[in-house]
Every structure is written in structure tokens, then in C-alpha cells.
Length: 160
Image (cartoon, rainbow, N blue to C red):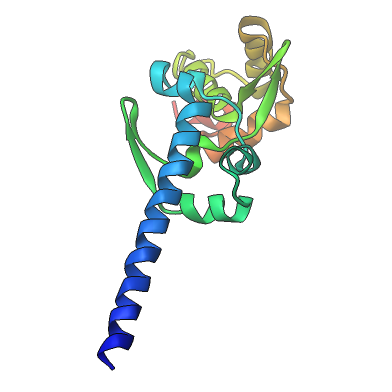
């Protein structure tokens, strides 16, 4: 009986150690891929998918997904869920930009708008194209704005 309990305890300890190693591998890979984010902030977040990290550490995507669920990292720029570092890309001239970076730019554009004349999604598309070389559809702006909990320009104007 005692030997059985000792084996169970050893198995549990080994499992916890393996989990820690996996989390550490995943985090090191995220640090590698998102180095610009950690050094310079949210605007430098790179497009990254689970497969990139999985390939980097030699594990399956589902393992990376499980490991990053409900885990957080404290960074110089705040505390972020590990899932935050995985995001899609949007075309930006000759390279891509992370969708989270685009969302941040949308927040900034709207934060700097005139309250009496809120910027439309179409105007945001134009600003992103002209000032940041980001090509994005108006409906994508609307989707991101909704995700961010930002009202449409007509509704923002009515709040005045």
C-alpha cells in the first residue's frame, strides 16, 4: 500500500516538473518571437500563431494551446494573458503587423478625435493606410471597434 502511494506521489511530482518545463519552453519561445513587444511595447507586437511556437519547441499546437490557457505574464508593459501574444496578421506594405497593434492604433485614432465630429470607420481605414501603411477593410475596423467596446461614430456623436 505504501509503495503504491509513494509511486503515485512520484508520478505527480514528475508530472508537475514536466508541466513547468513545458510552460518554460513555451514562454521562452514567446519571448523569442515577441522580443520587440517586450523591448518596445504593444505597437511592436508581431503576428504569431500557435503553430509557430509549437514548431519552435517541438510540441503539438494543442499542447501549446493548453499550456497558455489561463496563464499570465507580467511584462514591463503590464500583465497579459499568454493568449494575447498569439494574434493574426494584417498586411502592412512589405511586411505584416499584428492585429492587436492595429487595435491599439484604432484606440489612439478614436481617442484623438474631435468629440463633436467623431471619425468614421471609413476615415480610420484612410488614416491607417496613409499614416501607417496598413491596408484593412472597413468591416474589419468595425469588427475590431466592436471587440474593443467602442461605439460607432454616429453613436459616439449622440453621446455628446
